[in-house]
Image (spheres, rainbow, N blue to C red):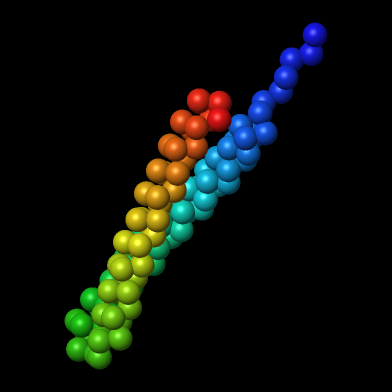
Length: 94
């Protein structure tokens, strides 16, 4: 007697879960790179200020980078929540 394979919805959930896990890895890499860029820009901003040079544009860029990282981290949280949901759905077999 042949056993039935996983249900189509469980296969779909598994595929979605893999996609979300890939997105989480990409998000982690993007956030790490973003922090590196932000720290570098903050150093450049400090150097401009110490040298007495115009720094307003650099200051705006630092603020923009910070805001962008905040949004990326919020998005990462949503990805984690989606992964938790999909894992639970898969565990329930739906």
